[in-house]
Length: 506
Image 1: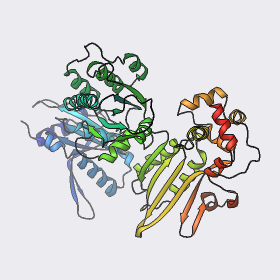
Image 2: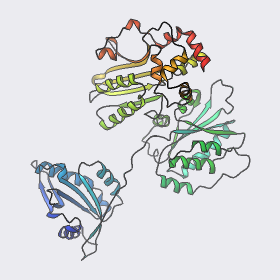
Image 3: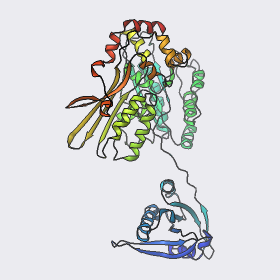
Image 4: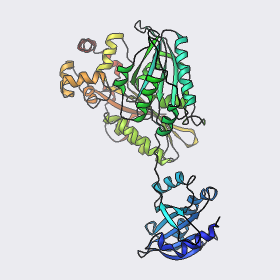
């Protein structure tokens, strides 16, 4: 087996076989920094455009592990010592083996400010080496679950536990399937809940090829008489993503429920939050390579399953700090999307986050249902509602100093004669049909803020401190007539007739 130094010498003498525009500057180019640090570049070359190419050669997985770090170091040294621009530096990795190198190289190639190339070296003694360019596949992270979940319901806890164990066994045999299961028992008073024992299945993305390979090893258990037939329901849930098809395959071919013992359905992701509020549930159980190294705890499992960092249409719960700029930017982007149809809260939340210092930590919890008439109809039917918008942001500063912000739907403007609900809908929505669709589709929210404003209700945020409270608008310099401001309950107490009218409309 040839030594690395021998392969390096052959490549240096035949540098044009790698790139015809390159001319050799030096083998083991010596860099001496002013602070005394020294380095040796395997091969340094230059082209006719005044650009330098740093070439790092490796011939074993063990040495390949250090290639990325060394390239960063050499590029940094050249840039600092010789005052080169980043655009004048190209980094090339040559290696005879790529098993351990390809993953870190894909990250380096995607995010480096330098031009980056990688080549497989084909070397035979006494011959000019040849090269095959490595085109890495960058895998983007995706911590979000599929946008709906399966909820299983059963008459008896033993029936529920048997199917739960079947899924557990599947996940143990197929570790590539990332999933969270949550057992739950109904604790409410609704008589139409005929299957009070259940569990939810939330599935996350994964390595599709490995999942398919794992699934192929499972025995088909779809046969059998008197089973619950979910085919029609499954077709309604089908999405383009491969994970959805794999989930369907598991349900149709590997999980069957006896007819009469129970059933299952698929629901929008946010419905899991509503379900767990009325069912007594156990701690989530997570399965799959995504969860097998204990990076996440039970609180993470639950938050991720509910999609509360940007996927949930109502809830957004997260912690962030400007000292983690990429995560902070992601949070800002997700918040702007989450509040895209609540312009007042979006503007005021952005104001709060723009004032943060690097050392500050923001703890954010927002509930934003945006459905005024839905909330009023809840009050008509039951005298209360879970659809009360709320916002809380706590800023933790050094020396145990905190700032608190609270958001709500405030009653700012008294209207002597509140509009008839149908007229208010016509003034806010393109049509009554769109409003009816809004009643059952959680993503049609762009007209809801306008409906609230028809009744003098606005989304505002208060800053709370030892010196009292101020609306964000006051802090920004606008006047607020506080004696004209009441809360949402005051509005409801003053509008009994409106509650009846909305209830009749629904």
